[in-house]
Amino acid sequence: MLRNDYLMRLIEQYIRAIALIKSLKMAKNHKKALTVVQDTVMQIFGVDAKFIDTIPEEDLLLLLEIDGKIDPDRAVMLAGLQRITAEIYEEQDELDAAYFAYLKSLTLYLEVFIQEGDTLFPGYISEIEPLISKLEDYDLPWPVKKRLWRYYEKTGKYSKAEDMLYELMEDKEPETEILHQGIDFYERLLFKDDLSLNRGNLPREEVEEGLAKLRITINSIKGSEE
Image (cartoon, rainbow, N blue to C red; front, side, top):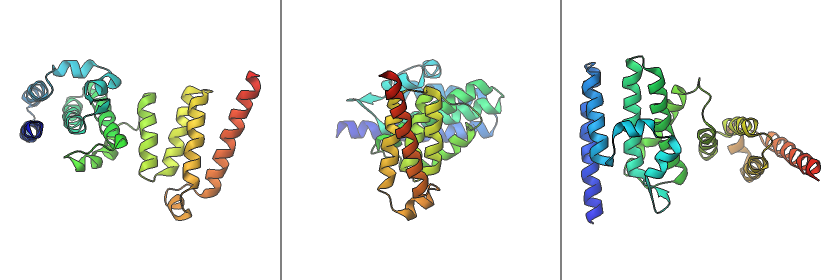
């Protein structure tokens, strides 16, 4: 009960802060808006916002873990703060800073979605696609691509999931772990009905073809190692 009360206070504080930041952003008072972001990060997460700016995405996830799983509510709040920070940087033409803030925001949202965290912010899912669009011109880090692969599969966008799988394999070629995970992916899809596969723009025959190619690739790797 105490933890729930504390969490609700943090959420109320976050909601008030986001409203204020948006108001300052609309007024083009970027400096004050970033100050409110910094103060909110310190109050909710107990760390300096500059530390959040510099820490790698994977380390940021560790910072938000409780018992080996990400805390979904705190992750969503930090993702929201990172997104609005990115928008402020973008408006100031600080594009490198904007990229890293967008990337952290997307990473956090994807991780919450993949872990199916029970959050008091169910609407966070609608934030993912706009962030993907913001970052579509960048070659994203491998761990983010892997999360996108799982996101596309879980949302029924099977053709996009396959595209992301091939990007992952190109980045890590010829690593057999991702090849085995790719086989598992295709095998999961074979249990889907034809209507679902067609809606995901990956008909059954293409699934079977992709699965066969990966099996051949793995067998060729095994043959070269013997």
